Image 1: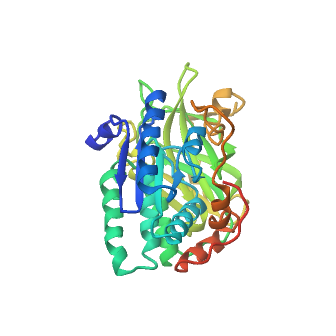
Image 2: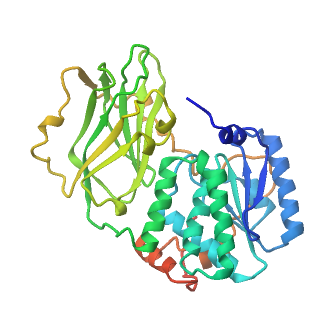
Image 3: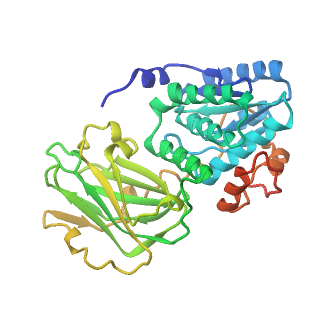
Length: 395
């Protein structure tokens, strides 16, 4: 598994502050930053921003919630999502809406994108807002869009994940009208892995799937024991079909033999509103983590078979696995049931003492469309600088 120069730099810095444009600022910290170093650098950054911009900077936190962030600046909007993942599509809409409303409120206003972890998260927001701002394009914004594109391509794209890039494409396609919204129900019946990765010393793999909808687990498969060579295909069948709607995350794990641990084989995210075919294939370079993993064959791919109803699809008996594939349906195993996203939304412990601080609720209520259905929210974004809608608190 190779590590690029950009990835190596990603792991070595203590704090990276970049003025992407004159009014959009990125503040990044490495995921493994030592706690004392992180809080010290965060305070120094806050002091600098306060001295330069006063009360005119709004911070969007793209990472886990932390008391010390909101303690240093009460104008904080919490938009965090797990590192190396794509955010929900409606969250991308809300972030663009929040940025645009704040920047248009006062010419002195600036936005700070705070991220502790991989820069791919910052890249998603920058690329999405670049596409959004292109809707109401003006000559004086062309330079800003060029600067955002340069930041995305130079600093975020090399360390981003395929699903993050996919969600940026979704957002751009939906805004431009190149992607039509699919409102039909989708039922997942089969997940076919073409090409078996070598996760065991003698080859083969023991994969199982976890499927999440809106980051909540909705399905866990049995454990498939595959001893075939890398040319083998394996089909995981779900009957009756599993109804999927909205943001979907499918994560495939390998359960180690005689070892109480599991490894991620691949991860993929998609939104059902952008799925129009009943057969969808993701190649190796479209699968998170896997695209740079030598254990997964280069020709490997993952195929999804959908329908518009839960009934078994006729004529697909050829997808059945051969006798070399066995399945253990003991999904009560804690290793199988463990949900790695259980605690993400909990506020992280940190070093700031004192009374509980609050997110900048007043601004949130005026500007972020978290209460609107996705389609209405998307339409509201498509109008140049629409008036801020009233919404419920819920970030």
